[in-house]
Image (cartoon, rainbow, N blue to C red; front, side, top):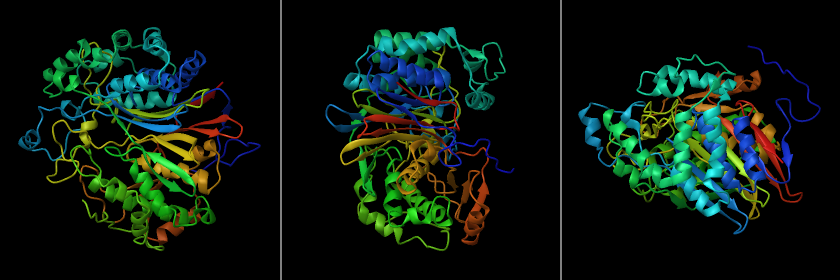
Amino acid sequence: MTDLLGQSRRSGLPWTTRSEVIAQNGMVCSSHPLATQVGVDILKKGGSAVDAAIAVNACLGLMEPTGCGIGGDLYAIVWDAKTQRLYGLNASGRSPKSLHLSHFKEQGMDKIPTYGPLSVSVPGCVDGWFELHAKFGRLSMQEILKPTIDYAHAGFPFTEVITATFLRGMGLLSHYPNVKETYAPNDEAWEKGDIFRNPMLGKTLQLIADKGRDEFYKGSIAQTIADFMKSQGGFLSYDDMAAHTSDWVEPVFTNYRGYDVWELPPNGQGIAVLQMLNILEHYDMKSFGFGSPEHIHYFIEAKKLAFEDRATYYADPAFAHVPVQTLISKEYGAKRQTQIDDLRAATSPQPGAMTNANNTIYLTVADKDGNMVSFIQSNFHALGSGMVPTGLGFMLHNRGEFFSLQEGHANIYEPGKRPFHTIIPAFITKDGQPYFSFGVMGGDFQPLGHVQIILNMIDFGMNPQEAGDAPRINHLGSTSPTGEAQERDGGSVVLENGFSPETVRKLLSMGHKVTYGFGGTYGGYQGILFDARRRVYFGASDSRKDGCAMGY
């Protein structure tokens, strides 16, 4: 297929699809326009950035059930203007305490199934909402959840990208109990523009709004979840739900060319971003230029090294020693950088030695007082596990699939343990002040997406919209966090349309396997940049998704 540019803009780089949205009083960026609008409405009512983020997330759980919902987990990084600091929240759930490794062994499994009851861990989303709200909220939860409750009963039109993803998910999961009754009650073959309603989810959200988080974790909702899971041969229990807590954690950072880049520590994969940046700062990426063979080669080689460490060391720190400070140190990055060959692609990268040893949504919101939130939430694969508790209107996630069943692995399955997570929010500060709140959803791709946005803006001088619209680079074949071995031929570089044939030929001569991945995994990005001098927000939204940025 020949690449064609369908527009001729008066400004910006050739691939730019639209201008940034610029506003003074607040900004919301999400993957659905109606959800973005809900967030702006909450800000206009006097809600905080966190209030709006919760409202947007609730709306996306209804309108984009392929990516998120109250059956999943969430993570957030919040810039609080009052205290002038960042706060991190890990609202991921833990594995069932009555399920043991021996069960998988007795079933002859070497991998946890993607779908069905065994991949379900406690959903942490709702508790995450209430933790964030207690610390940074202004409006009541009734006000925050009302727009979604109204849409659940009245209906809304399906958008293009979500419709396509939804139909694929239904093809995989419609045979499970309650799936059709919830998502296609009249055997609809959904098309974009069709009106979708989910009154059962509306009733569930109303219960949560009226009775609080305990209704979800200790009340009727928890009991319904437990009863349903037991009927399906699952292990998630009422006691597992009742015991759940989120954790406030300290974000960690590295400095990249004068900018502090912040991520959350494991059980997520955010520190892979910091590891890659510590390697890449040794190269003059600006002089190489965007899309050059050098840009792509060094980026991919840094990713290979960071992902071998990811597969070896990243896990729930309550169960395994994760040497975070060593992994994100400048000294360690310099050592890893020396293992990169300037001229050849690595075929068998290894993890570093320690002395102490794909579906998601991302949204970001900023308010008139300078508060900003970087917020990511997920059901994991497809619509989730296929497990839809009777009458509740949502599907439980399948994040537990990412546990390893290999003895001795840091991420091995254990009762009450958090699985390795792919979802990661990010934040950049400059001279101690907020600069950029952003994220790129997309499973394993997320660290690659984060680093590319950072390189595009800091090294290649792009604005937030140009940085998101630029052609992306993926790499497949690293060792999995479940312990499945990497491809020993260096894996595959998958380039989005837009890179030159000359670059591809040079990469092939260096030993890279290169393909064009039309329709491949390149994530979904949202970002808000704060211009401290003008005191305005610049919002950007990924053209690969249905959403938009909107301010006021």
